[in-house]
Length: 68
Image (cartoon, rainbow, N blue to C red; front, side, top):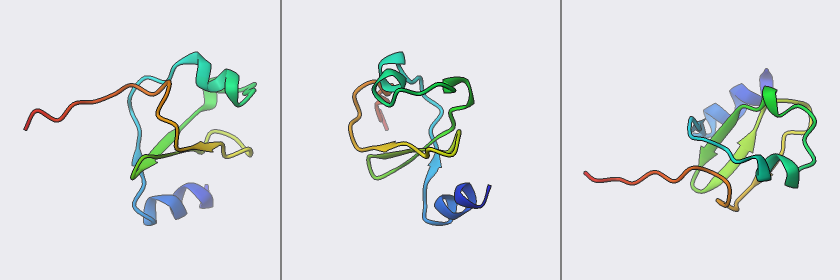
């Protein structure tokens, strides 16, 4: 829980988009159902388990478009 609070204080926000199964396969994740992704400046950080997987590769993460 402390890690999650720390990254929130660093400016990470909860990523609420879809994450493709290929991301979990890449990390060999056994508990994808616990995944909780956060995002800051193109850096994805998971807080779902003790592994705390992270990546800068947007492949497999739902893209959002800013029409504003």
